[in-house]
Image 1 (cartoon, one colour):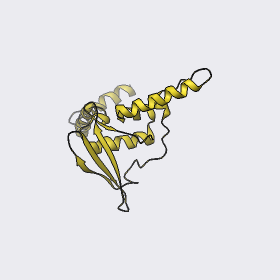
Image 2 (cartoon, rainbow, N blue to C red):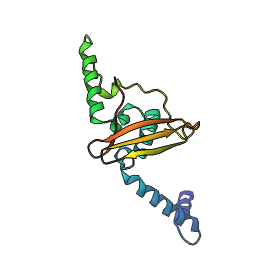
Image 3 (tube, one colour):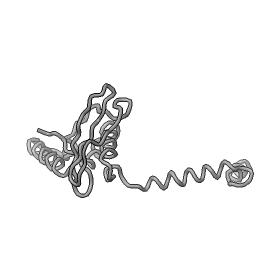
Image 4 (cartoon, rainbow, N blue to C red):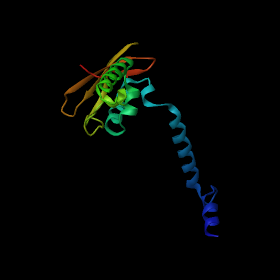
Length: 153
């Protein structure tokens, strides 16, 4: 009886006008979820913001998706070299060669991301710090998406 009452009370109608708002909100929210992964977005600032957040919170498997083919190839080569030096053969993947520390991942730590330059192949995004200093991040188009090259030298 109590369960039946709860279910009936959630059905939108004239007794629950706020429910229509909730349904519309959830519908529009879920529609936005299908926009694809952040690393495939057209705005280099969005891609860099996603990379920074992923580096800080989600780990190397997802961070791998933001990296350029050249960076991935270099990390794969380093993993193969490492695995070859192990007595029983190592099991490291290219993404396992990344050891990310703390990064500027939120606007609590930086003021904004600003597109300084963009053409068909390259972009420079400035990370503007709260003190006015900037960090330039070079990006380029790689397989129809913006990608990040890590400085691995």
